[in-house]
Amino acid sequence: AQKITQTQPGMFVQEKEAVTLDCTYDTSDQSYGLFWYKQPSSGEMIFLIYQGSYDEQNATEGRYSLNFQKARKSANLVISASQLGDSAMYFCAISINFGKGTSLLVTP
Amino acid sequence: EAEVAQSPRYKITEKSQAVAFWCDPISGHATLYWYRQILGQGPELLVQFQDESVVDDSQLPKDRFSAERLKGVDSTLKIQPAELGDSAMYLCASRGWDSYNEQFFGPGTRLTVL
Image (tube, rainbow over all chains, first blue to last red):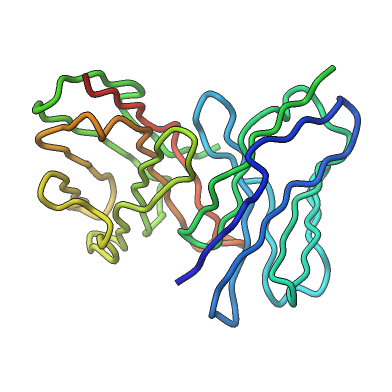
């Protein structure tokens, strides 16, 4: 079984600043993929970024990047230059297993 | 751009009534998922289909929930009878053999049971 832990229920960041959302996981699989999703208040889950367990480089996708530390089983999402539209829930997931999410509020 | 379709977007019902949700995945996606998301929580898998076959329904409350994907394309999730605790967002997702194998989610159905 896989378990995803997101310890930050809520985070605040000022516009244009960077923010890190934490994710730790537990899995017995040797090969796995880590996903981050964004869920605005409208409810739709939006795929942001993917990190394969055997990828040697940290994934990046525009303003999103992953700080992947395999030995520590950690896959933190970094959002650079935060925008007001980044305010949403953020979920870390492996396959069908999701964390409880972090609520991010970006302030002017 | 291809999208996962769900209907209805919102549903209000009284307890003990029957409700049904519909999902049409992205064309060609063989894997389809139904999740339930309680407010403030992450999505929890209810059922996973591979084509028309159920792969995982271990978390589906089978006394009241049923799901089908008869032709391996669109899918229906039914609750009968609905209970107050069923109030949640019901998300459908599909997955194909893309580069990341990520799930593509529909807009969800927000169910309120009174």
